[in-house]
Image (cartoon, helix red, strand yellow):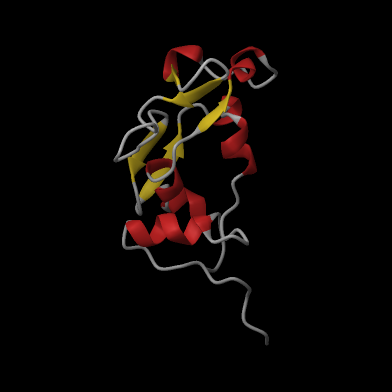
Length: 111
């Protein structure tokens, strides 16, 4: 994919995976908005909407595969901060495939 951040036209990960994290992140430097979370167990929270059979994070705005953004980007939880487009384990491309989006190239073609 040439130029720009592919995540700005994708958003598949936000509508494919559960976003769960340690409850302390609502009181951390990130200050994940507690009102947008739901309990998973006594130590973990999930972003609302992502803990369902057809997940979609409540903070995801826009249309997957078109133009998306995160309404709490500066305050997003650690799984979102750690998730990488075109990651080594293929999670990004699995999410993209679920929405009929083409895989990201693993490396740019050699010149």
